[in-house]
Length: 284
Image (cartoon, rainbow, N blue to C red; front, top):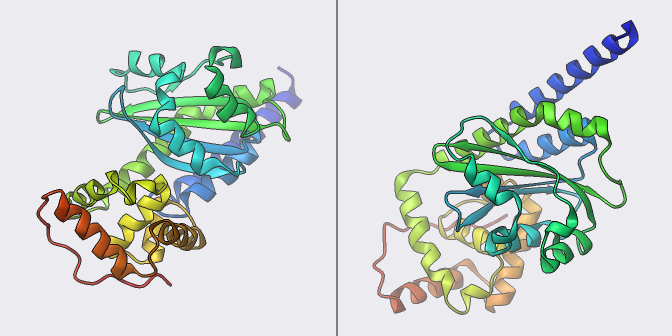
């Protein structure tokens, strides 16, 4: 290795470390996703990031979607809903469930995906390349995917090598972020949230998208718009947008109407009420 290449390598390693530190400083708060994307874009030109959680091989949850894909929220919901069952990486993820180190996924050619998967996650979204890594922690797998769009082009060999080198640290930071956010909820709040979710499996509440449901759950728990945004790692404006769309779908205009609708659904299901929030704050 020449003196010039050694210098370039040192500069690159310094830049990677400093950039990751900025994201780590925001672990556990609502600014993490923006800091993470800033780092990933500078690191390897990543256009979009989606993070999922597996507790078992049957269920998935979208924890984070951020970047330039316009239908990112819909992709996250679709993957968590049923497309995760057709992900070629899933077999590798659960083969390594007993390991504590990050798993770097091999490149999977598009032909290995089902046609409906390819259409939604590649053709409709404009994705042309993906780098993925996963980490098992406390019985939960955090599965991070970093995408490139057609407007940017595929990853270069150097970018792939950089992601291979930094992937374990990145997914560890993401895992810690998700762990801290879930740990912020008090046990009684978690119990109430589980009960509230039961109302969203029947009409008309089942017509909401996953993100609209999450925002409504935050409203029902008495959270402010800022608190909901921080918990879901989205902007306050996005919270207001999802609230408006949810109310339109449900043909209601106020939080009191939402509360009454949910209570009616729970009553019809024969579920007793927990300790409900005594005050529902207005979303400003």
